[in-house]
Amino acid sequence: MLIAFLVMACIFMLFVYVRQDKMIFFPQRISQQELSVIHKRYKNVEDVSLKTKEGVTIRGWMVKGPSVGRSPLIMYFGGNAEEVSYLIGESGEFRGWSLALMNYRGYGLSEGRPGERALFDDAVVIYDHFSHRGDVDPKRIIVMGRSLGTGVAVYVAQNRVVEGVILVTPYDSMTGVAREKLPFLPVSFLLKHKFDSVSRAPSIAAPLLALAAKDDTIVPPEHAKRLVDKWAGPRTLEVLEGVDHNSVDSNPLYWETIRTFLSRM
Image (tube, rainbow, N blue to C red; front, top):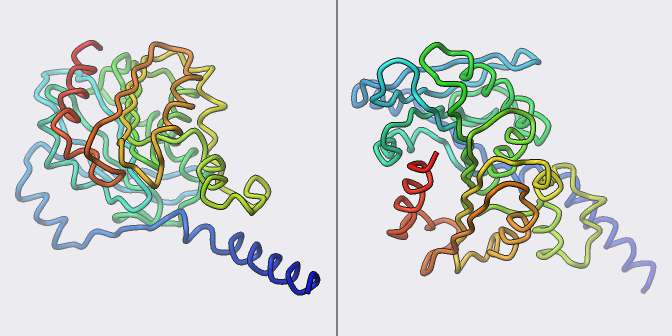
């Protein structure tokens, strides 16, 4: 019986290891019809296409703010099942800031397959492209991430100069979240995509706004607190009541808190 149990445990661990990409990443595509609607509805949106270091094409948009000349920019990194074009319709909430909305590999119209290293490398390419544009103020760039994307935003903040960081439903590390969900597995050994934000936090001096959801069962607020506690720069953690991981932006204080943070930059 012990041998049978060990065999079954090994099979299960192998299954988790092999399938983890599909358990972490849920690429969402965008149709040509949806793309056409964007072009017709929004006149301040520019299609952006970039080549990664491996020659993979990633696509997204620049939503231009009302500023004349060089504008401040928010660089957004979405969740694991998020196609980021929906934020074009929310761009007015950022009041005066332009938005860089680039889909991960395999998401939207971007080519390739997502993975931790690919997302990190591509995020730096995205930053370098937008920071060198003539219509962007390179001294006023904020990175913003939601859920999975908080790990990408933290990586950029550690490796490039940013004015501030906004993290929505952030985690300390993917390992920390997985260990809580699967305490009987050696997740540190099994996980290929660790997204270890908490180890990067002590080296980041940029101001941080973290927004957690009180009823979040996917990434409970305790994970956000562990990350915020290690942050080197000024930091604020807001735990929003009555919302969960997927509905956090429905709390009335969500946009108000973000706008207050941006006004101080």
